[in-house]
Image 1 (tube, rainbow, N blue to C red):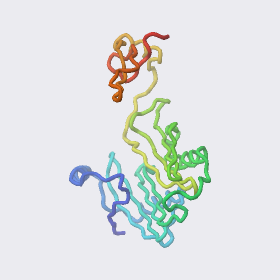
Image 2: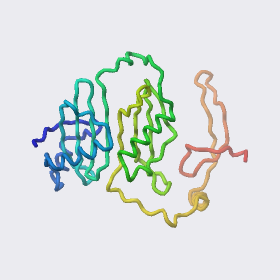
Image 3: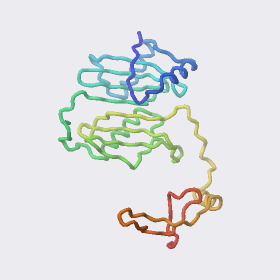
Image 4: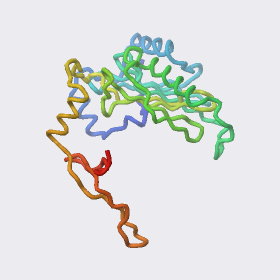
Amino acid sequence: MACMLVNPLGAYAQDAKETAAQESAMPGNQSEISSEKLTQILTDLKKRLVINDQGADFKYSVGLDYGQNYYNLTWTLDSQVQEVRYGDDKNIYAYSYNPKAQPYREGELKKLPQYSKSEAETIAKDFTMKAFPVEYKNFILADETSISGGYYYITFNYARDNIKAEGINARVTVDGVTGQVTSFYTDYNPKAVFESAKGIISQQEAQNIYKSQIGLKKIYTYEYNSKTGKTENVQLVCVPGLDSSYAINAKTK
């Protein structure tokens, strides 16, 4: 099967020269795959997701990133476009569902969400479980779900041993009217190695070390009122020795 190169997911756009140099230097990168391999990928995807491929214009491309191949798959119909980024490790790294016509959305949303916040979060959890059937338990729901234009925007933080891994998360968008997942994306790195949390110091020990090695300092904070030209709300506070972003009042316990 000939490969038809496309750019199905804009989130993966990179500098063309850097990408070309990186991929040419890495063995295993391929521009097309066998019919057998493609059939295996599609069979696996259809077990986990609803793929509307009947009569769809199907295209794919293959790229190498994080040391493994990724397959960018696109199904285009008159009514919708579905895109999936699938890794050689059988995880789904991105998904998007774009209806070409949404009669209930013209300017401002005319229908109230049919799904509650908790229902949308459950839908997002279920999708994350399908995308990462082994690792999904490490994606922890963040307390920052928001809704805009009838869509719920839901974030999951990645954690190991209940310790958050900075910079790794999954983001899911759920249509509040239809309950459809319209997008999923994660920056999870399959090659990341996490040090064991066994034997780590306690929270209290960490606080004691922080206090003894970094310490606190006292500063005055204030607000300047540009209208009156006066300094207001002057307070004496204690702040971390290396950071003044967080403060506790220096005169109260």
